[in-house]
Length: 454
Image (cartoon, rainbow, N blue to C red; front, side, top):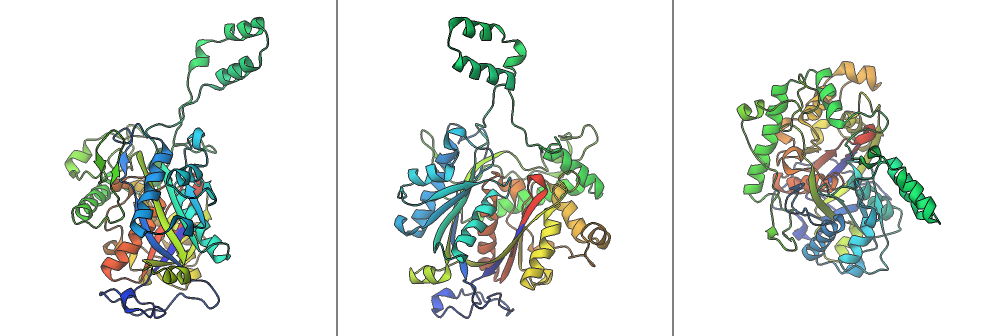
């Protein structure tokens, strides 16, 4: 799990040009600027529409979506391609033909072959890792301008032959005589033909994430009704934000051979009555996690432009926010797989010298409604904090009037490798819209890991 703190540009006294001051002014708070530490800013963030897997993007490849996000970022910012020093992308389920999808997408988007690019993977926080890698490159003085992003394509995941069949095929490739080849072919049995399907499951525990979410909800006493209510909230808020034009990061994308796509297609407000009809998806028949209160398999890509403040201002850009700090944490992947936000949030707040009440905007990744509700309960529990985290007191629960107000992964979709950039860009946009100063992003990930950005 990772957590990141984000600071609005609004109240920054170091920006002299009045064009950098939005009309909405924030209340005065302390600055997180540190002497001798380079200010790093988010200039812009975009994403393709997030679509349910198996829909309009179905005939594409991951690098097609990543390329579209990169081109959208170039079009929106107008930054010269040769001004970018480095490109980092995150992804989870890799297409073997484009294992370094960052490089393939960059070349496809028209970047110079002289611009280095690499791909990172850290489950659902892969693009968070891409962004913090960018921050590290800039802070170290290696770069001034880095593009970070992420992509996931669930419409065509790699499906492998069984291990026995793979061994046979590799042996066939090495066989020199007809007799050797016929012998190998004759050894093929029906069991050899059974494919290996990818699963959203922990290698270390063999448990699916949905099953873990169901157990977590039960451990914290999160009811089915609570989960359905939160999921309905997410879809309702996402629909309102979409209709109001608040999802400014979404770019239109002409899908080859199909129509132009300009909106996420997973936003579907329902009713508690309709949601209650669904059966448990993982623990049957008594589980509480269903298709309605879980995030869905999603195709999509995102990209953000991160620069040193000095470089951004010199090039005439109006940055959206400062990227102030971040932490990564890990915990037990069996019983605390999805509790990363609970562990990461107090840690990043302490590093920044802030309290929960200082945060104006919260954006938490919604893998499952039960995961969100369990984290909120854990964050508000002195017993859990003292027993499992070794801390004296709880961090508290984020006020819901500041929490995921434009929807979240349950409704907007969750392309594993791309969600982190969406979260950070959303915080920046909400800070501008709502007149806030500090925002916090938190997300859980497979392996019991997490990140938090303030």
